Length: 416
Ligand code: BGC
Image (tube, rainbow, N blue to C red; front, side):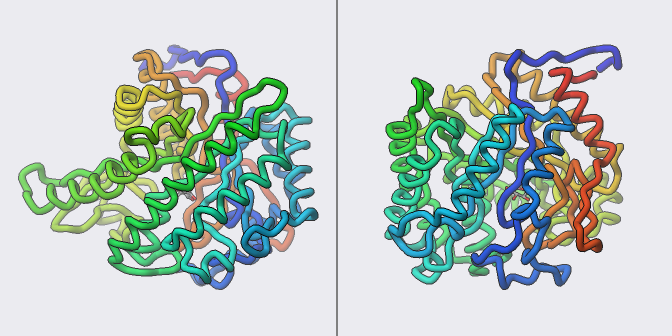
């Protein structure tokens, strides 16, 4: 790509940033409250966005970002099954939405992002089919309360990651290992809840003739064998592909269920290659030094694979013929030049897919700020803004990538 080549995006394209409640808000009571991450940290205060959402919105504005994907925390809003919504907590989210509107920033609301209220967890979480009705009741009340304020609804964030890391790998609460039956049940129940919740949102969320849009955010990871002729690693990669990509996509979008979504949210980061059954990525503990010797290009989490962005977009378009939002893409590294290159390469691949008739409506950078990265605590830094966690005031400071992204958002184009 020559440096004077400009990739233009269509008018109205959403240039966003994404966050989630447990990772930024603090002061939450859910299954993460007592969770201690690998670095010894917890999410009790996180970025304290619970008290600082006006400041966070001001940052979005300053950066010229025109969309914000964030979550509503179910545990704040309902204290028991079928209870009325907590009006004080609701008022805070309404204030957030009103402030976004005043700043001309389009919200995309996420209803489930790796956390549940304690009373749901006590009853077995998503392994229990009763959770479906409780969730749909919650959604119905929210839709009534937020009518006219939200058009873009994201029901579930990465049900694949949630079920896999919680029930197969043991990294997320409830930290179960190799419970394949429970993994499948969680996915199936979430998929059933998505269909029902979508019906409620689309029927009851129409406002002034504007129809709500509904979709899940599916993480897509490519799985490969490091050595093409290693049968065991190929088999492992295939098993991962079937379990995390195919099974989950079919559960949510297969057959008649496709009609429950008006868009697909894609969270795309990169790929994982297996070598002697080992996932060769920093996130599963393979040291970066060793990965470099093998010639892997990784951020602090997974192998980078920008061509994959185009491949998966074209595949999703062919298979489902739905509009797509990139609900997350990001890169965790202290090397800002590396992050910039990663962003530009992924956006170029995204742009190519659009030239190839894929209908992509927006891109949300993960994440607006450094935050609590689940089992890794504060060690993986995805932010456009740095947060100084050693300072009780938790000041936010833009990193060099924020300047780069800001220019992209303002110009609605990327310089190749
Ligand atoms: C999740 C985020 C997470 C990010 C980076 C996605 O899987 O939705 O919550 O922080 O990836 O790992």
